[in-house]
Image (cartoon, rainbow, N blue to C red; front, top):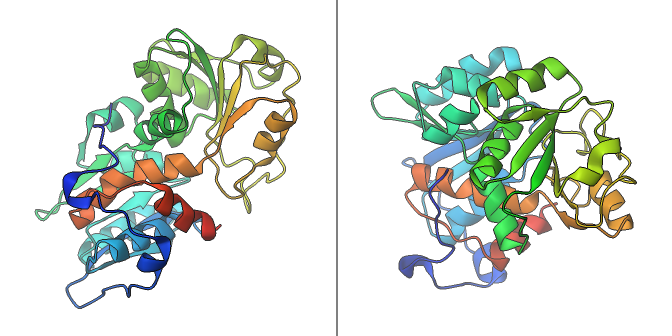
Length: 304
């Protein structure tokens, strides 16, 4: 599991208003620390809005930029960022497993999940890979007051990098985790590295929802600009206790979450996971453990 960082620390406990931060100029000099987010696509990402807000809030000389990179150019892009003096980068769809393969050193969460969403470039040229998605997801659940039975059951849609990290984190919470994916071979591969993971055929998962306490969409289905932005599966078979989560946060209310609300089910959007998973990377690159609070959420929400 990822280390837990409290939302307030003595040195950063003072809360500023959004206006006080938004009017502060960003400091970018010739010595600026640089980081970014690698993805394809990456236009949906609100990580630049989040990290640059934190840079202004703490008066740090630095910048965080979007980096659209095709899969076949991923390694070349990472090596180029290293050569250009970047401190590291976040990694989003579809590069998380490639990032894991490229890293010279993996933290325990990344080793277990086989996926990386945060790269740290060390001064000696090594690349350290971290997995903060799972920790960010459970921190978002906790912050939203969502509690599940100790031996509850969770079903994850998707078998990519985010699914790997979230599945591992939920297993660490004591949940029985199942995964379903349109390409079952990928789900089978995930089950092979996470003992105890159940694989459910894509064609049957909707009918079996009555047996689960948590449903999590870890794919880009339902994402604005994604392959299927209207993804809205049936939740007719769900029990009244089902919590429906979507790691997609553009749009804020995805079709899946809208369907869940229509059925009166409790929901969890993807913005909280984004905010909480970002803290570790920011601390690694910029030397400050940032606060996730109402101001932070309001700032990123305003960019949606």
